[in-house]
Image (tube, rainbow, N blue to C red; front, side, top):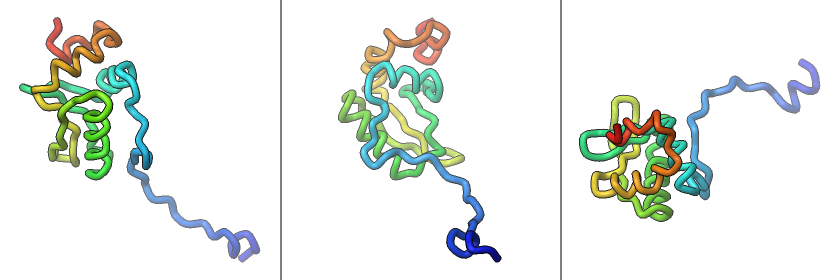
Length: 115
């Protein structure tokens, strides 16, 4: 064993789950919200989901509060097969569309039944 191994032993890496920062900053603008929707969002019968099952339950609740505080969107966290997903309630779906429509690429209009 050499000195480096004694001072800074190597440990096996464990997989990390994504975490929101202590003071989450995303999404900050309607534009960033639109990018998130185009990447990880999908419509449901009444509301709208964000695929956030890779985040912890605590982080999903943080994101829910961020969307309420920054954009006045009513959100919840729903359990799914692989974890929890952020859900925008039906009473906020029109508000969500109003915020992001100027930034949506036409190809993604299907996510709001616009085509």
